[in-house]
Length: 134
Image (cartoon, rainbow, N blue to C red):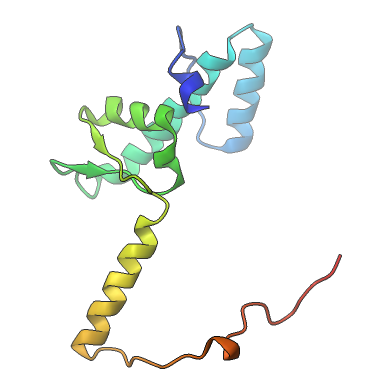
């Protein structure tokens, strides 16, 4: 969808942040004949606006990194770049950055003695305690 939104000629305005009402706006724009590209670009702009509104309170730094699944969507990345007025840094695997950060923090806490490193045996690890069969 990201690539489609980049092809927008006249992106529509999606003003609601509530997904139910935003969906109604999308249906309305479709009924009015708006292109899929213009609607997707409008959605990306609305999502980017919401993200920027949340981030502004924290302060936007000189370099901004986009992580997580949204960073894999070029349309959303471009919309965010337009909103903040600067390019975003996107790591090659943005879905892994949170896990890597958590691992580094954990390593640092163990090194400081703040947490105790426990030895684990894979055969003792239970991922799913209760299996549900449908």
